[in-house]
Length: 323
Length: 263
Image (tube, rainbow over all chains, first blue to last red; front, side, top):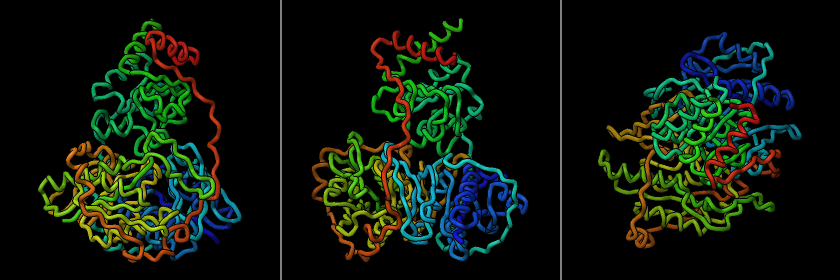
């Protein structure tokens, strides 16, 4: 037996995160190949049937740590370390997301275990897991193996697809004693939405704005262009953190994942954390004055130039064409 | 209190980075620089020190790396650190995240800081994880990717984006906090500070000086192994237009959009 344990993140309403569900499906597939079972860990007072429903994605067992709070990493490290040590578990797997990085990193220290991150694929070699990890701005892919078990695998956002098999998981409650330092951070507020509630996930055309817009006012250019094409406006994390645009419009690791017919990136450098949220767009058009911007590596049409000159004229031209 | 800032020397952004196929390690030749994210951590330390909400006796820059990493420490001191510590030992070469986090925790332990700050990611490794590894070894609370730190009542009030929006977290000291680049705008060092940087105290330490058993670090202490390198799946290269005449550029863009029936 060589089990794989997945952390199943949920929001305050108890809805499981899509990336966690994808990780469970991936774990179920891999566990089958290495002769083990996939299990999930859920923290907080999540209902029996909600926990059991993770079986639909491939979890044979769900460990529930009711007294452990959701939302901060270190208490969850305590819970995962206990479950890993007391059961026959060879790997811990995390879907994309910030908390997975923190929990995986904490487990590395706690269990003196190898860790890989930003993993895009996992394969089995000689009964062991080997991960594919893109490095150096995705210009190479390293195959990385583990010297000992357990091994910790932190997936990249959207790396693992969900697969619904219709099963139901056995729910096992676990008592976890928190480490002294795990209770020294307290969540005062979780998931605050900043700025207007906008919908970018249903748009066929998205104009994404980044730091290259220069200032908050630069988003007016994006909005006018999006209007001319009947699209919506999205943003990078950098400009959302700077307060230039609402959080609801943010694409990437801690934002939305989109796949519109057209993604027009204006002043977006194309950092990996943004790329993972929009790389499945059908057509990617990038305007950026820096010819070395990573976005040009994965755009279908790249325009090297000043967006402040190009975007207004482009808006006019599209309006004129549409009459 | 004492703040330690973890810094790292990374290849300059303009350098084409590559992996040495013999060692499977990053080729660290060429121009190097202080990891840009670490300048935000240093600035955060200076703002806490200058803010006055809590007295800060000392800001200490700490790094692990080869001899050349001293330059990153000089830059950190020019940006305001009072002194620096350099963990350098051949035994550390080839350390993975697990071994690196352990080694950094040991050198930090010898400094007994009240707060450890670091950049959320390095330009070369893109791991995002070191802060949380170090924190668990030090048995301290931690938070990563923080974009706002306020000090009140001897605690930190931190903000960051997580999966569902912005989280506000209260963290007791001592703690380990990694910061994002949205947290502040790092200052430029003054000429005087650059000139004086080499005169500030710099402690060089080997593994044995901070209680690291050489077997726990380096390639032998690492728990992961790079087995091979492959190019990413081939993607058809996109078309690139240099904007020389904007009217012409716009015409080309419109034609491209039209061809794909996007307008």
